[in-house]
Amino acid sequence: MVTLVVATTIDPASINPANELLAMPGWLPGPPLQEMKSFANRDVRLLQHDRSIVVEDDLDNRWEELTGEVVDEVIFFSRHTAVSNRPALTVHPIGVPHLRDGEVPPQGGKPGWAAPPSPRIGPWLRLLKGIAQSHNLVPEFEITLEGTHHGPVTNKPTLFLEIGSTDEYWRRQDAARVVALLVWEGLAIGGGNDVGNWNSREHGKNNKVLLGIGGGHYAPRHMDIVLKDGVWVSHLLSGYSLPMEDLNQSNGETNNKGIGGSWKEAIKAAYEATKLAFPGGEIIAHLDHKSFKGWQKNAITGFLGEQGIKIGKPNDFY
Image (tube, rainbow, N blue to C red; front, side, top):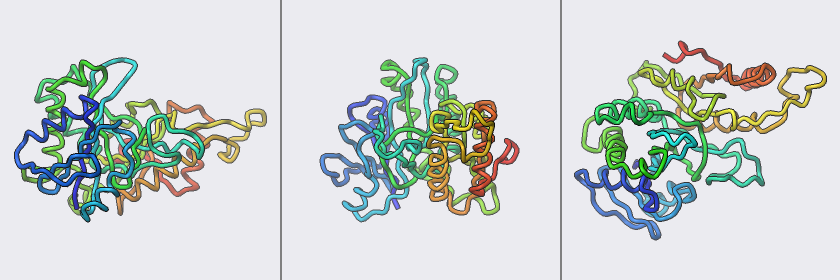
């Protein structure tokens, strides 16, 4: 089993962390994947390409076909953009599960798809915060989750690590160093125990997995829970990933069958992908209740009940 780490040369927030990681001991050249360079260190493979980070689909499958090595997970380095231009280091799962066939994803992926979310997302958010603090990037940089969004298509547990939010910060070498250290320590490339490995968690420890539903892109109410030690997190479906249309406004019905939009498909896709990434886990939905209107909350809670998905309060995840 190998971990793929992917960077693009056209993005300083992607290639700089890759170069910082490659400057650490033990790396050797690996076989090229088409025009992409690769490097190997223990059970980690780093790929470099020269296209947008969100468009090179199926790199996990392509690596397996090239080498015969089984890919266990995929990690991407990327820039982050935000209207606020605030400096940030972010971690998030990927997918566009709310899009329907025929819709064109604006940033890669394919309609209705959600990648299995890496179990490392929660533990690595907490580790990232500690590393960033020790390198004096906090409070200048915000350390945050993001909602599930964009591509590329992957089939194995996946996460994105991003530096934001303007060119000045994309090129910050101290931020690149912190992201590289997160991967070095999180994957235990230099030895020791890795962080956020679902399969090696202590027997009998917390197996509850948060599936975030609702709220803004930076998932503040979900993040308040995920920052607590021991919490696992999967997909985070922000409000824009839950398109809902009340088809019964005139007659006052509140059952979810009268609600249009692709919100049900988005929840189903995120839930199924989470089951793949967290075998044996107890997946519990956490709703950002304040972000929904009454009819929306009624529809979502009713649908979750039909699907047998438990709804939890913050204390249910500790």
